[in-house]
Length: 373
Image 1 (cartoon, helix red, strand yellow):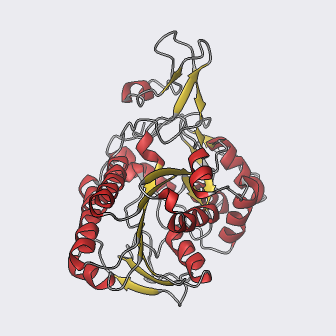
Image 2: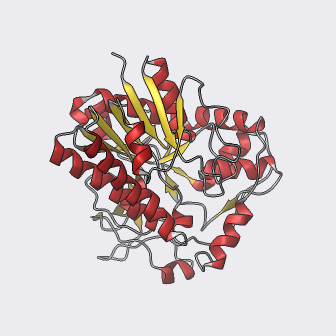
């Protein structure tokens, strides 16, 4: 049955792919997006389907929200400033757009009495801080606190067991792992998640919070130096520059294709078992940052090797990858795109783009605020 669907922040990388999936399924899609110049330099992106009704506006504008919510039955709330590093020195903007913007959306939903049947909120793995670990020596499982600036400045990248001193080895991170907030971005994403879940419990609205891990794929913003690391690495390679890797490159992440993210969102809309739940969405298979750079170089047929800088960024965690058991159980979700397939698709798309390299810009900005060394 066709639904009237709103995607906030939907003109971006992930939202536009979701819009395509929803349109193919026969739904009517409208998007509210502020078309931020950092992401959209030329206004409405060419990849956005003409069947989408795009409303330009700020998520914090109650008048615009009231208009855009008219007749909406399902809301996907993707509007947010993204990026751990930038959030550490643009504190006011991140908290305003992400936290206050979500408050304005919920207030407008309440005041407008729109016939909303479901709200899906795009949350983030950044909420966890460090992932789950197991001691390689004594076998004790732990959820350690984030590394201190002192530890990072000393180049001590790995985490040790506080019982026996053995090195901690990463384990899949499940939804029950307590959050350890270590950036303003993470704080704002936790705000978004909790506010939406509180609203759902209070007003009887089905709400699902999907904690996305590291999303990659076509349409990632190449003008934004805080976009996904895969696109940043690929842009460097296409400009005959070495990808710049922080720490020693062995930090583990969960890279999940945007196509799998779209499937998860559509399942969350349809499956009542997901109501009121927080659910990890990743691929469930860890890959090191060094391996990401190597795989992209292979896909782009580049002989340029990444540069391991031994520098750090404040707010980064050592290891975190998803336990997707809950998504499998409640959504019937199974990641379908392998790293090899997904990075090959990204590389092919990037060959056709003007791959602007702004990694040095990011480093200069972080250095100016003492957030890297």
